Amino acid sequence: MALNQELEAVTKAFSGHGVDEKTLTTILGKWDPLERESFRKKTPHFFSEDHERHFQRWDDHYVRLLKHEFVRFKNAVVLWTMHPWERDARLAKEALKKGPSSYGVLIEIACTRSSEELLGARKAYHSLFDHSIEEDVASHIHGIERKLLVALVSVYRYEGSKLKDDTAKSEAKTLSNAVKNAHKKPIIEDDEVIRILATRSKPHLQAIYKHYKEISGNNLDEDLDDLRFKETVQCLCTPQIYFSKVLDAALRIDVHKNTKKALTRVVVTRADIDMKEIKAEYHNLYGVSLPQKIEETAKGNYKDFLLNLIARGN
Image 1 (spheres, rainbow, N blue to C red):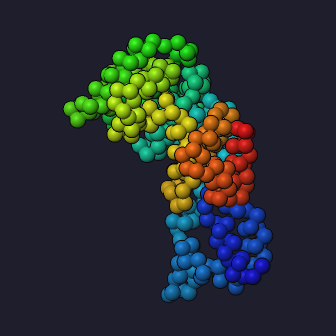
Image 2: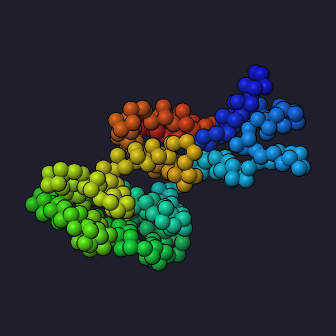
Image 3: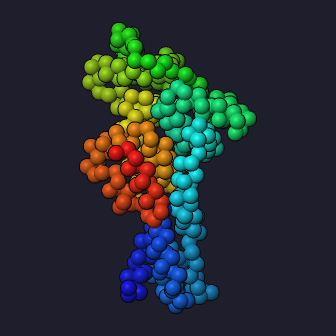
């Protein structure tokens, strides 16, 4: 392989989600000092030239990004081998540490797990951190979303299929009125809306979702301006659409590292649950298969591990 082709291959190996370990090993390992210098000079987005001291230095920002790319495979393997309760507890703790940009992870855990799975995560949280998740959510979150999030992580929903359609229709009207009057009273401050979303069973909420569209002509999540309520409704009523959108955002090039991390989280946590349905919805929304998108975007062992996990849903 000519040097220019090798330079292109190594640049590609460093770019994207994860790194191509095989390419880096076979090419970088044999380069002499002049070839490595040529690589540094021809990749100004990786390196900057110190003209006064006559050397090329790694860009600090890119070094930090690459550290995250190198550990993606390790993190995926560690998460996969964890007990699901511990995994969710640690994901919740990390979301609380990172702050508002990651609070959607708390909603995801609270609303897409079964009652027993959420209870298990709460038990694991006790074991790992000597606090309750409810306690930490209440003490760490100071914004107006605290009431909703505390209610969601504290709930133990009815899991059966029975529901009262008249009640669902009445509560759909309640939600419709709350949306219409959001300019007077923000949804996030509406205790009745929080009660409905935080306590009703998922079949009941899906009935509300259907009746709401009959009343308003739109889907409930489409009419909600508040991000936390939008995420809550999607996780409870249309989880495969929610996960498809999270995956699509994570698979874009040059997104924030926290957005990229969602790729590992979703694939690992849904591989044994509803990955088949998520793959079908992803293809329906974006016109490309999820495996193909991962094949195009991810690199190395990380890519191979993700593809193995999503194949479990076949």
